Amino acid sequence: MASYPIILKRKQQVADGTLAFYFDKPADFVFKAGQCVRLVLIDPPETDEEGNGRILSLASVPADAELMVATRIRDSAFKRVLSGLAPGAGLTLKGPYGDFVLPADTRTPVVFITGGIGITPVRSMLLQALSEDDGRHLVLFYANRRPQDAAFLDELQGACKGAPRCTLVATMTAPSTPGWQGERGYVDEAMLARYLDDVQAPLYFLDGPPTLVAAMRAMLGRLGVAEDRLRTEEFAGY
Image (tube, rainbow, N blue to C red; front, side, top):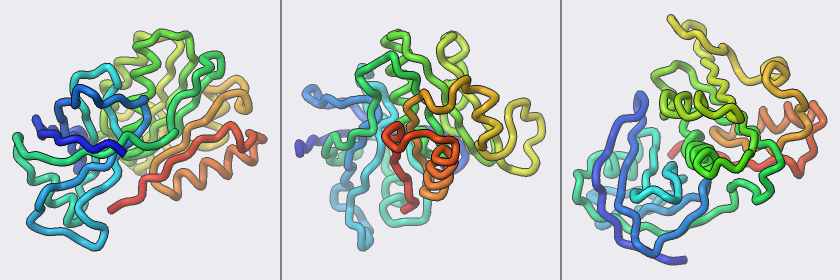
């Protein structure tokens, strides 16, 4: 797989405990919305048993001049070093990887069900589909504990607001979310029924924590959704 030197341009907090990292896109780097890359630290001051690199989904759109990834900042050697990097720091990028990408057939409606940092490849795919204006119908169910935990929520709400074929269903699972006017609780059969005319028709993209992916797969199975209509990707913490 191809390897590229990249330079950190800037970083930005996009939710509580979540940072986005922006890099210039190498001239010959091509990827599909939804794919991931391996970011490798160069001579980090600390490391762990998993080494100096991690697989991260690209949250940027292929047409963007920059590459962007976003991640929860947890207490691991890789995350400590990554979050402490200053603009101008060099890393190595390898990839792209993965087939968690939109189907070529735009007639099939697409439903995304995600939570937390699982939004990163979904942001890429949803914004890509909207930019192509290909008539594809999109519904995004996006679960977080609180609005301040939901990376890119305002941006995605704005993008879907002007697109009649895009519906964003944000739901907050914390018992108390003062001022929140949207859905509350976990994504379940009743919530799907409120927004989907035919639950068996779409192609489903399920990603996020392994427990969320497993729960959504089981729920859709109970609703009669065929296994070949599910695409999954798990985001375990590290």
